[in-house]
Length: 314
View 1: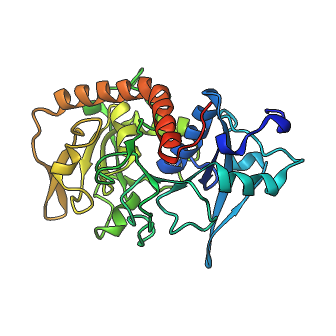
View 2: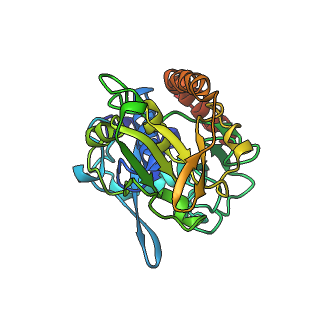
């Protein structure tokens, strides 16, 4: 941790995020962003957010259960505490995810990181201001942002090593995710429901997906779909209200490979997709490219943010 006497609040970044959770791609990205900024030489703190009936509450903690031990962060110096945080809120950079409405911490230099569409998750828009820096995870989430910062939410555990070809697999899964906001979701006949709280670990999820032939996904904008593609499972999208087919072609990673399903009675049938494997190969190559470029893109983005607010840089 940097010596507290050498810290400069105008060069410091606060990242507001819920505690680390593997099941939320947005939360993973926020914690990984902090890690990347620290590796690039910036002082970046995490301010934890908790949801209550009265709204979001913010607090500092060193509880290891709230973080991924493999990711870096700079702890707020104990001798400075909340007084230091107030200085950074006034002079430095504060990054809110789009689920935060308004500016509850009264930060002066606000970055809005749109990890989904504005208002999609909480049902109310962020109320960003003209002077805020609008950062988008994808161009499909926000029109004309100041910058786009994206990467696949990937663990090396998600792969096809030693897995059977998909047509030899005997397991099918149904995933609801955020699809419940757009459709009346139900378990597809002959499949097992994959709930958000299970499996508990990525290694277990990877093993499950490596044995899955079809993932019937009611959430067509989910990192679980990408996990399945990495593991060789075929993704079947069950609704296009959340994002239509044209929008699914416009993401930074290119068109996502998927099948469409239709019903004959209670049985699901798949529309043919002769270009599935070709689309999948291009998609995975694009994922790999963005993964390799992440650190350089973080560096370019944070420099743009400091320039936007006219603040000194490292």
